[in-house]
Image 1: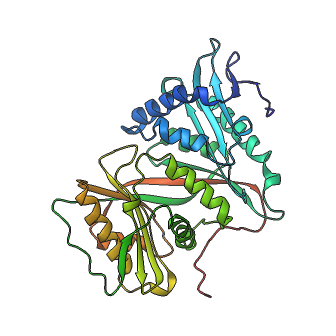
Image 2 (image 1 turned 180 degrees about the horizontal axis):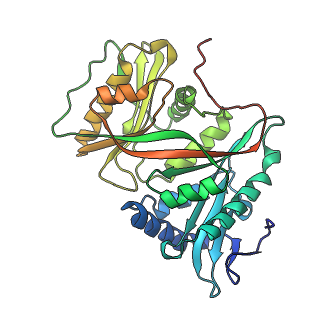
Image 3 (image 1 turned 180 degrees about the vertical axis):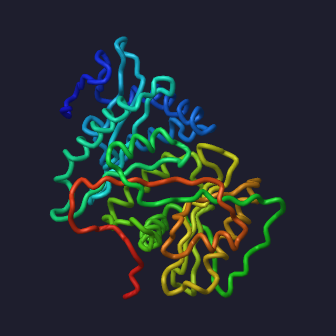
Length: 344
């Protein structure tokens, strides 16, 4: 199947893939939400959230996104490859077909388009670097798992959704000499983005990105996020030194009433001093003040920093699992974090 602007399907003659445009967004998101409701019992995306993704810096929709159209021109599916940021070594794809029309052969043909679109962008990655195509899914999405297995993808990582139910107001955390305060937005936003980069450095799969490009992406994200609240972005200081960082949301697209801990990180010199748990408890306390009685987060099930143990010790429990699949597009040097670097 050639990566052309219009692509006739082999599995369903009369159906074809054509370039996605923002005018197609409402119809595509409706299919995504209906599919999620049917498969999982909840709608996991909103139109605002997807428009933010589709308009992110570096997006080339004509090259990376297609809609599936039937004989009458009605949109019945969507496929893409997500690859807006340098160094372009981890690309992600997504396949969506109207729930009542799901067909394994059709899904594989659409996934093939995404893979070829990703291969057409191999030249963007540094020479000699390993490039992979990724796919993430809820472990309950069995038919997507079968699709990925048939296409030669390999499950490489498990992630957990962990949650705590706050039946009463949490105690304020013991800070042990650290000072915790909200981010001063917008002047401290660049420091927050740097802290995010530093905090993710010890996460499996992390890839170093250009600081200014990363800042532009984050600015676009918060500018288009209805849940963004700078008062829920917290810095922890040891004197004048940044010791830790945590940012939260008062809601997520799936459940606007659920507090969400997006990231919690303690800088290397300040670990094993109780700061991680204190930041988490601070997040619980602040979200409770906003009438959030459930708080959740996502975590690598095999976290290199043993984050799962920290969250369990704070009273959180596993409620859901997600799996990450990879398919190698080009062998080479792996630029992503695979293990902790203890040389610093």
